[in-house]
Amino acid sequence: MAWPLPGDEQTEWLEEQRGYLTDLPGRWSRWSWIVMQLLAMPRYAYTVRTGRSDSLRRKPADTDTPPDALRELLDIDAVPRGMSAAPPVSGQANRVDRLGGDAVRLAWAVAVLGSEATPALAASLAALGPAEAVKAADLLRSERIFTDGPMPKFGHPLMATSVYQAMPRVLRYAMHDKAAWDLGDAGHGPMVTARHLLETQPEGDRWVARQLYDAAREYQHRGAPEAARRCLSRALQEVGLSALEKESE
Image (tube, rainbow, N blue to C red; front, side, top):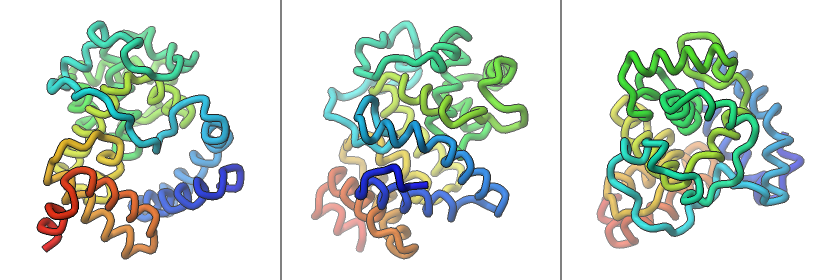
C-alpha cells in the first residue's frame, strides 16, 4: 500500500503501521485496519505529495501557550476557525458541524483517539457527561457518520481524516495531550500514549519525556528504529539531554 508515498514517508508509514498492528488483538481486527488504510491511502498520498493540507504526523508548529482549560477550548463559539490556521473545512466535516456542539466535540474526540476510542474515553475527551455523549453518538450514527455498534467509530477513514484536519490546531494539541493521559490512566502502554504525545507541544513535562523514552525503547525492541528515533527526539525536546539521562537511569 505504501508505494504511492515518497521514499522517506514510505519508511515512516510502514513502521507506524507495524506498531499499530502489533497492538491490535486479533487477525480480524488487523485485517480490518489494513482495509481501512488501503481505502484511505489515495487521499493520504495526495496530501503528502501536494502539501495541500496538514499531515496527521506533521510536527506541531511553534505557537503560543494554549489555554489550560480543555472545556474552554471545546467551547466552539470561543474558538473561531480563523485562529486555528487549519485547512478549509471539507463537505464531510461540514456534515458534522451542522449537528451541533456536542456532536462536533464527540467527533473531534473520536478523530483524535482513533482505534483507541471507547465510549468512556471519548466522552471524557469531549468534556461530555454520559447522557450527553450517548445522545451525541446516537445522532452521529443516525447521520451515518459513526458506524452502528457499541464503540464510537467513523464509518469511513476519510471522514475521520476530514474531521481531524478541520479541528483548530491549538485544540488538537490539547486533546492529544489529554488523550495521552487518559489512555495512560486506562492502562495502555507507552507506545499508545506516545502516538498522542508526538502531536503535542513540548512543555518540560517529565512524565511525557518518560513515556516517549519508554516508547522509543519498545519500538527499537520491535525493529522500528525510525519510530524509536521520532519518540526519542521528541523526548529530548521535552526535557533536554541531561534530564532525560537521569530519567533513563
